[in-house]
Length: 113
Length: 114
Image 1 (cartoon, one colour):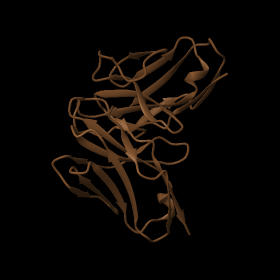
Image 2 (spheres, chains in turn green, orange):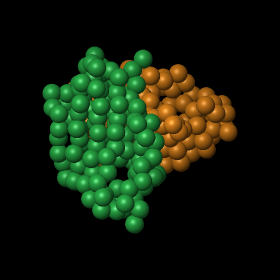
Image 3 (cartoon, rainbow over the protein chains, first blue to last red):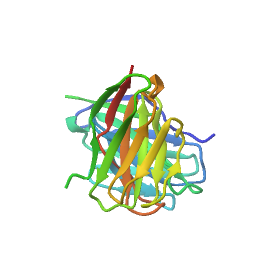
């Protein structure tokens, strides 16, 4: 079956450094991808999305890269701050599904002062 | 602007009891969803409502029912709670019917079934 997975369950980053969170997906038919951030006790918060006709998209301090050849998605956070400590999820939407998003298990990012 | 509001925030039930989780949104979104989140398993879709008046099953619908009361409100009912339903439940909305629209989540209801 299809799955969305993350390469590493945890990531420790020094404050001020750049963070890279990776996500592998296996459904080549997926055409829409989203990154979410979830802080303790809260719901997932939308960070950035990208469509399959794009390779890169930038937001405020974040960049998402999509490599369809190897089915890889990454989230880059520039100048990581303590407030970036959270669990990060990637999600994909298969082309055949209008409503179903498949979520990965998440990567826990800890920012060291 | 509250976004997506879920009530209650916490609930403890005994096996066999029933309850309804409430979700209301003020984002004027058409689609609403119920997910559950369990450790190490990611978010799994229970039910969704593409628009007012329609509901459909997701990945894990057994043991649940839903009602799309109006455009703003989407409730999730557990008729006879089981310990396997201990989880964090999230309601979400999206603005465009179907494609290329991110979900916006509430802050969840933490349910424990003993």
